[in-house]
Amino acid sequence: MSGPDACKEWRRASLQGSGPFEVSKSLFNREKWLPLCQETQFMISHQCCSVMKKRPMLTYQRANSCYPYIGTLTEESKLREQAWLRHGCNAYEGSKKTSTPISFWQEQDVLQYIKEQGLEIASVYGEIVTVGPDGMQYDSPLVSCGKLQCTGCQRTGCIFCGFGCHLEKGETRFQRLARTHPKQYEYCMMGGAMGRQSPIRSHGPGVRRRLEKLESKANMGAQ
Image (cartoon, rainbow, N blue to C red; front, side, top):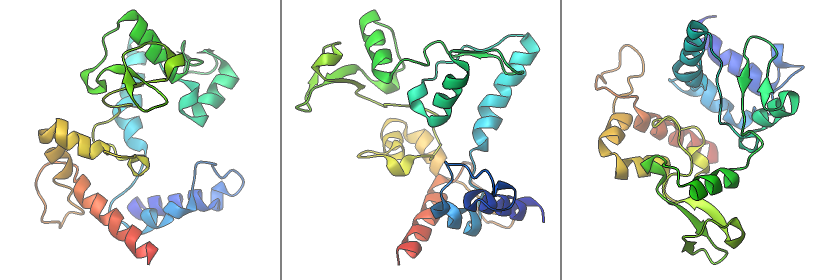
């Protein structure tokens, strides 16, 4: 067994806690996603992050004999919380030495610091405002008056990534992309050849085709 079939088998074992994962099933795995790993013509993975971000940064780090300062927060994920509990803000053990100086901050601390210091942020975030208990926006840096949030994107990442989009309320990342960057949206949605014999030849990752396929699977599961 090799290629896509081997990958699907590995994912099945990982999600079900069988085979090599029988003793240490990850708490992040959910068996409800198993049909997507077994029955789709395209591969679903988080490895794009390693290929497009982590590996290039590690290559640069080794070539220049330097170590990174990383602006992640422990509240962003369970893995980051566990890493901070083990190493604190500075990890000296092993080959991946890193420093996360604001890891103990919370998102509200970051927004308040940006607001008070008048720091420039990317335009996609919009402005930082205070949302009071009444749901109204106020131009105040005081967290005690409400909760600070951005008027644009609350978080950003890879512009074409769909991870977590099913949890979004209101306008989704793809709807926002269509409104703010129509050319990038069209590129994102177009393309998506599935296999060498596919007639599709247009450029683009083909997110539309994949979302339609996932919706079809979800509807079949609901029936």
